[in-house]
Length: 143
Image (tube, rainbow, N blue to C red):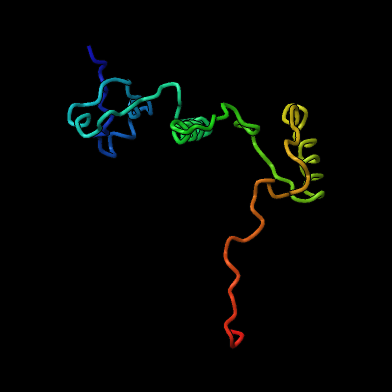
């Protein structure tokens, strides 16, 4: 037996709104079956209740999982950043500013704060540093 879906359309005029409580105006919908007029146009549509829309990080991770699903490469199930705020300190002054800001925020927010990379920005070892574009050859006129 399908679960009922409530109709949340607002069919009241401005005069009636002044006499209503917000709970009477906004009605949370119940998760259930799509109306037949909609489900025919949406083939094989998935609802993932465990992946809440309020968590953009988990939405991002699901996108990465979809992109990695058919790859031979394993997907990391967690990252160094997670859902946590990340700050990149390009200079020693930036680094000092982060440390001062954490002191101002207090122990609750500074707890667990750590650097996850080195202080210097370098190319990855597998980065090609030689151009793949051919060097133009000069003709007999030097052009």
